[in-house]
Image (cartoon, rainbow, N blue to C red; front, side):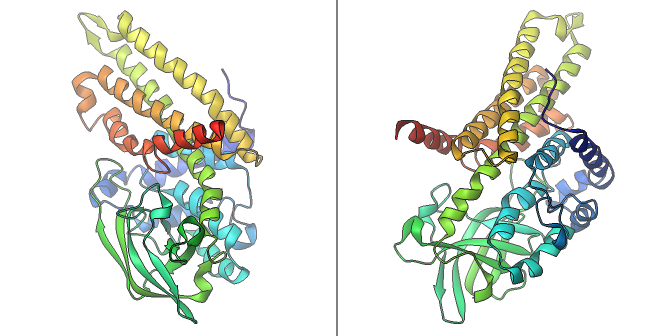
Length: 380
């Protein structure tokens, strides 16, 4: 079925993204994977191309659009290119909404121009060694000292952790307050007491710098509080739907791309004197995956359209996230199997997609958490 989600403007943007990837990302990506981090120049190039801050008002250098379909195009093309290391989705769709909706005018002037140009790379620090999906378990604390906040604690698995110039830190500001006692603070590169740990060694997404962060008596200026004191949990819940949609879009795009390259492979690869595609079992495998992708794509496109109009709720975002990423995981496994021994070789795209995509059912809320959100809404 032909897709009706995108207009000519979106497709023109897609061509811009593809050209950017071909020129500024793919020639260097292998080296970035060896280095464990993307070159900062790539972020600056993305800024020059207008790929950063799509929803940021034009007065600050952004794109000035709230149409999520442009973000979906970015996610689809970066996924197809296997370029997860340059985390523009994290920057634009996860961190961007906090800065545009919660920042004061002074904060916007201070941070948003660099956010859009690529001079300021961002991260958000929620996960801790003892607190992942359970935000109420956060132990990082911020104490009001009158003219500043004193921040102490540690975070782990933080994407962009090494490169980040600006980190939104989730901290407890009301002892014993649980979810009602969380606040958001912006910690900037070079702040005394803010230290980065090791660049974590992952099984996939090798170019994406993922780090431990430590905050030891960090003096956070009062003007770096983001939003209201103790309002953090509500802000986090409000923005999680978009984060999950971005992950879901990547999930279905990855599954579709894996199916495409596997179809090409089984047509060319011969066994027992004929192409694999002539074997009934292979055709059945392809048929099943193609059908699952088509059904999932229809639902995802509807979710993208709804979100672009501000009509997508957290429950349907959770449905999209768990279903699309679990499909991605299944398709990656089955496509690797159909490649045989070659699928296990890192020079084949299916092998890289297999390891890069495995995190999708975990970050942004695990599959189990997504099911809990959905089930709770239905059985309340």
